[in-house]
Image 1 (cartoon, one colour):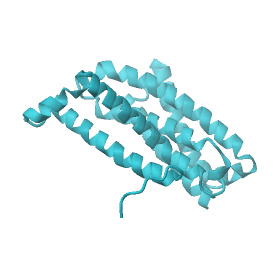
Image 2: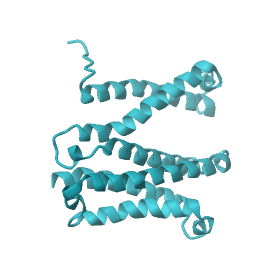
Image 3: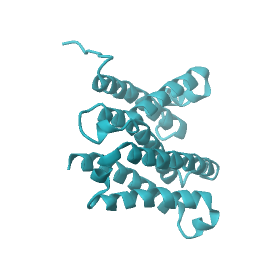
Amino acid sequence: GAPVFKTWSPMSLGAWALLVFGFFAFVMFLVALGEGGYVRSRALSRVGRLPTNVFGLVFMVIGAILGIFIAAYTGVLLAVSNQPVWSDTWTLGGLFLASGLSGAAATIMLLSRRQREASVTEPKLMEADRYFIILELILIAIFLITLGGLVTKVLGGAWILLWLVVLVGTLVPLLVEWRPRWSRQVSPVLASVLVLVGVLALRAVIIFSAQA
């Protein structure tokens, strides 16, 4: 049958958002190919100039909004379920969004280190990541508080080890970005890797501890 869009269904909204975002992501992939000159093609060269006009800017803004929606979508989908822990807090959407943004900034820093523009973009990415991590830590605290008596379910037993990984993946990079002298002891590459490990650990502990 024909595709169905159910505005009242979080799963339907998410599926359509992923589909539409996939189109935006593919176009921006072509833009990157055209900008970088990785493939010699007149068509790609024209596509690579997309960000330089108003239409391109509007296109990227819409794509960014969709990306933000998808980053929060997993947390929202968990929150509307009947699973204890997930359904007992309103913070999961924001927490997954902040964590995802932090992980995205860390990934870009890792992948762009050898680029000529790295010296310009890296400080800005580090500053953005600092705010994302702070927001993530605040939301983690609110998440644990709003769980009430169920907090022992996510903090008890071996799950505390994953929470320690989360703390290392947030606090250490935060200190590296906040205190320049720490960067001599912890390289930016290691800090970015710690962020990504922390992002995975956060999702693992929230998803699996609730079902244990």
